[in-house]
Amino acid sequence: MRALRESEARFRSLTNLSSDWYWEQDAEFRFTRLEGRRVAGGDPELRARLIGARRWESGLHVEGGWDAHRKLLAARLPYHDVLMWRTQRDGSTRYLRVSGEPVYAANGRFVGYRGVGREITAEKRAEQLLRLEHQVARALSDAEDAVEGLQAVLRAICQSEGWSCGCHFGLDERATRLQFQAAWSEPDPQVERFVEACRAMTFRPGEGLAGAVLETGEPVWTIDAGNDPRVLASSLSRICGLHGAFAFAATSAGRRLGVLVFWSLSLREPDPRLLQASGIIGRQLGQFLRRKGAEAALRESEERFRSLTQLSSDFYWETDEDHRFVELVQGKNLVTQGELLGRHAWDLPSTSPDEAGWARLRATVDAHQPFRDFEFGRPRASGGSRYYVVSGEPRFREGRFVGYRGVGREITELVQAREQVIQLAYSDPLTGLANRTSLAPAFDQAVERARRRGGRLAAFFIDLDGFKEVNDAHGHAMGDRFLIEIARRLRSSLRASDLVARLGGDEFFAVLEDLAEPSAIEAVARKLLAELARPVDLGEASAQVSGSIGIALFPDHGGDAGALIRRADAAMYQAKQSGKNAYAFYSPAD
Image (cartoon, rainbow, N blue to C red; front, side, top):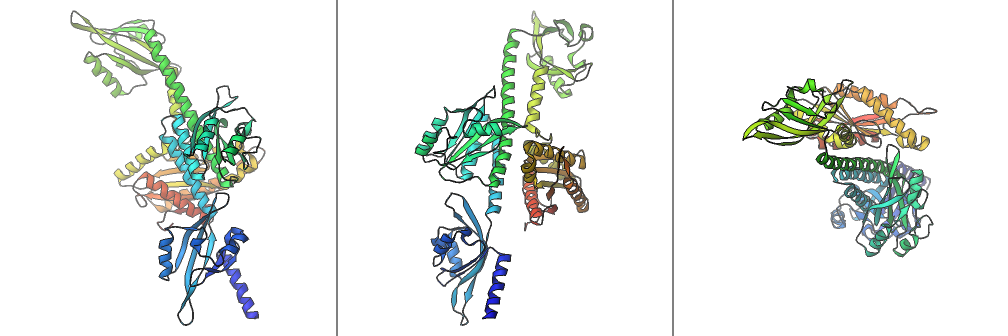
């Protein structure tokens, strides 16, 4: 008996070390034994129901379906790390990996199965929300306007998290009130009725869930929307059966631009990984809204400009039959009369367009065709450029071409606004690095250069280990300061020709060209890890993290930018699993 007790103790110890629970089934695949740390997710009631039941009778799902799995069992085959999952009472999903082998009696008779299981909910949850973050980034990149982008994001989040509907409330021009801007809901009359009521809602700072988020910048939630006084439509949400509500802010460069609010039928609080993802998605959306706002302002400015150009101009000009200026009336800081008269437009100093642009203008006027809105830049004596747009039409006298006449207007402020929009679209507003939108075309060009030269390049997917703790301990403002310093270190540690981008949150990406030897690539990876691990001064305190780097090589691991990004991402997770503060090359087995 003592030997038996010792054997059982060793068995339980081994089970606790290698898996979360041990199980046994009889020849009819009914559970007869369940032991371990995480049996039934720690739910004793569920554990009791499982004894004597088959897996497919317990509400459990399996990858590939139960028909295929039952065929495997009928063939008495072992299986390893099969993915299974169960929907919990609160609407969340618990994921398992289960392994099993057939058991035979001494006389060779099949008596059942035994095996182990382990909980992988946290791992699957992280994968799910990472996919959601990438889906949001793609949706915003493809959106034509702000409402289309908002609806795509609301839909992606609702479908990923199992929420019934979501709304975005944008901050008005005076930054004093949140107003309805966009919504998405599942096709349910009660839910659609609720969303329709939300269209008339407004919130002030501190008022309702959305107002609380606007005031503090932190996510807010409730599991009793029907009775929570912070929910302005609590009675309607109760009637419509909506119990849970969750809200977080859309931000850009520390400014809150709007609030997303979601409602669900289930009663559940957001988990820590969702709170982290909401911050990343909120910043992605905030940058998108800021860029679309700048684009709208630019379009409005350009429309006003075109309208005013029809009514007036800054200057009037004429040329002779050889396209030399002969007259300039009311010119404002273009050039002096003495510098311009008797010369061609393309002979004067310019900063834009390039030679091809001037050649196209010359071909047009040589053909005696009218032209509209030709833009060019002239250098300032004090530095920089002044920009103009001109329109012209040919002049004829008794059928003979005698020159051009036209009007022009200064558009320096308009060009600068356009350049600002481009900067917002293709640069990360916090760190100044390239963003996800500009990474793809630049990476494609790098791959094409390597292909033409028959060379190699390395793609580095860089993720910070422990950045969430920095945010939690020091706040988001210090977290942003931390990321700015990390971006500076990455940029200064690589060559000026290397592409460095921030993908969002604490994820970065680098493309290193003309690196032929693995030893050189590893040297760069070690250098970056050392830079990431150095403490960052935050003023009154300091913070320190490590990094995990995944590396994919062209052409070894992929023939295009998309494949290399995915495989560098996979290699980064391998580096994390190996203990973090490490780098790993992509392997098909990862």
